Structure formats: C-alpha cells, structure tokens
Amino acid sequence: MNHQEKPTKDKLTELMEFVLLGFADMPHLQWFLFGLFLIIYIIILMTNGTIFLITKMDPALQSPMYFFLANFSFLETFYVSATLPRMLLNLGTQRRRISLVACATQMCFVLIFGGAECLLLAVMAYDRYVAICNPLYYPLVMNHRVCIQLVTGSWNIGIPIMTGLTYQNFSLPFCGSNHINHFFCDIPPILKLACGDIFANEMLVYTVAVLFVMVPFLLTLGTYSKIISIILKLPSATSRAKAFSTCSSHLMVVVLFFGSAIITYLRPKSRHSEKTDKVLSLFYTILTPMFNPMIYSLRNKDVIMALRKLLCK
Image 1: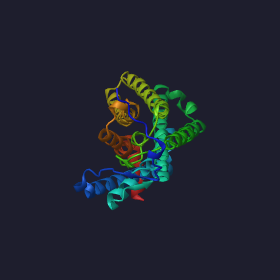
Image 2: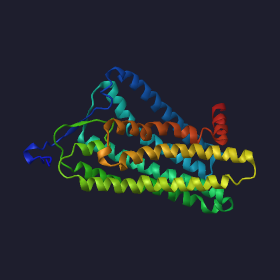
Image 3: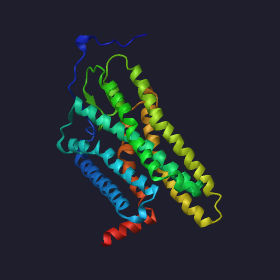
Image 4: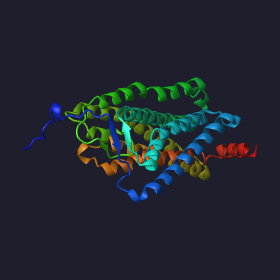
C-alpha cells in the first residue's frame, strides 16, 4: 500500500495569504452573481433592521417572543455581514486574495455568530413551547431576567470555544496551494490545505459541531414536535390550522438551516465535495437569513400592524 509522503520542513510553505476562489469557475456570471447577492444583502439588512426597530419601538411588541425576535434579527445582520461583504468585494473587483489574519478573523466571526444562531433558535423554540403548552406559567417562567440570561448565554457561550477552534485550525502548517475553493474561510476547505496530521483538529470540529449544531437541532426538533402534538388537540379547526401553519414554517427553516450545517460539518471527510460544501454553505449563511424575517416575523399579524403604524407616521 502506498502511503502519502509527509512533507518535510523544507517543503512546507509559511502562507501569509490565501485566495478565495468563490465562483471563479463561472466567469461569465460574475456580475450577475454580484447583483444577485447585493440585492439579497440589502433585503436581509432592511428586513432584519425593520424588525429590530419595530420590536423596540412598538409597545404592543414587548413580550418575550418579540424580544427574542429582535435579538435574532440583530444577530442575523452580523452573521450575514461576516461573509457577504467580502464575497461582494471579490466578485466586484476580482481580487480574491485574503490575508491569513483576515481569513482567521472571518472564520472566527462566522463560527461565533453561527453558533449563537443555533442556540438562539433553540431558545425561541423553548419560548413557544412554554407559551403554547404551559400558558398559565408563561409570564413566570419567561420573565425579563430569564430572557436576558438566555440571550446573553446564546451570544457569549460560543466566543471562547469558537475562538479556540479557529486558533487551533490556523496553528496548523500549510503547504502547497493557497487556493481556498470557497466563498469564505470555512473549516473544511482550510483543513484541506493543512499539512501533517489533522485528526485532532477534525475531532475537535466534530465535537463542537455536535454541541452547537446537533444538540440545539435535536432540542428544537423535539420542542416543535411537542408543540405540534398539543396543537393537534385544540378543539377549533381554525386554531389548529393557524398554529400548525406557523409552527410548520418555523420548523421548515430550522431543518434547512441546521440540516445544511450538519451535513457540512458532521459528514465523513471521504464524502466532502468542494462544490457541495459551497452550495450547502449558501443555505445556512445567506438563504435562510433572507427567509427568516419573512417566516418568523413578517407573517405575524402583530408585526404587520406595527409596521403599518410605523409607515403611517
């Protein structure tokens, strides 16, 4: 059996910058993609910004549910801004080089905001569970102090872990090509450029993915399953249809976001495909943040009423 020869020290290259290939394999679509992603970015900023604004200004939207929605919209803005501006710059200028420090910084922010979003989605599902399954205890269980603690925990728990994971990945020696076949500095394409034994790094990635993606996903899935079982017991067919429609749309976005992230970070290395990784990454970094405001907020009558009042001022 032929073993891959390990590079010696003189073959190792101390890379100071990478090249984000992005969509370089589609040269005739560069400006189309630039326009498309620019429109998507503007939509995400406007919708999430509007939701954050009206949930803070309107007295009717001061319940825990809208407190979580405001924080979720605020988080989505940061999450998307960690990847899309750099991608737009690369598409617009065709200068795809990114320094090692900038690449590590981007990865760190993407991981922190992505992990926080996973936790916050689980918190929002729990909020709906308490509201629907234990309505009498809802004001007591989801008081203002608890809401702040849950949001603060969602934002802050991942910071030291994701920072450590990023440092661990960029502490590896890199050799050969500095081309990253992706539109942002993600873990799988970075590890492909590393030399030597990366088993410990892969195990760390799997562990973090289980804790921040798989566990919140299972909790969210279990919570919505319980909610739907309660909804099906409601006496009114109209109430059942309305509640089920809301929960099913939430669940659809959750499955899309978590599912694409789980496949990216938890599937075996042998099944990794660079093209597949890019497509999946588009789902959890760009497409679901675009759909989230519409599904979680803009289909809500209270939010629509608040938006109308804001526009009429």
